[in-house]
Amino acid sequence: MSANPLTPAQPARSAAAVNEEIRSLWLRAGGHLTAEQRVEYERLITEWAAAVRREVVPAA
Image 1 (cartoon, helix red, strand yellow):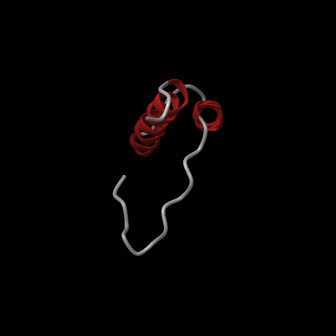
Image 2 (image 1 turned 120 degrees about the vertical axis):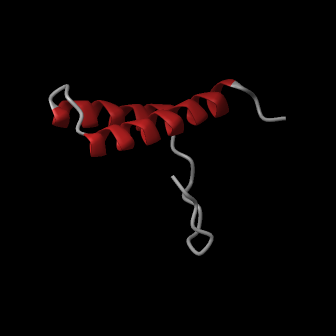
C-alpha cells in the first residue's frame, strides 16, 4: 500500500478491528481468495501485524 502525501494519514486501527475485516474477507470469499482478494488479504495482514506490535510493545 503506497502512501499518498496529498491525503491525510488515517488513524491506526486496532488489531481486533483489522482481524474482523480479515474474517469478513474470508467469509465473503468462501475460503478461496481471488488474486485481487489475495492482495487485499496481504495488505490486511501487514496492517494487523503492525497493530499487534503497537498494542504489545509499549511506546518508548
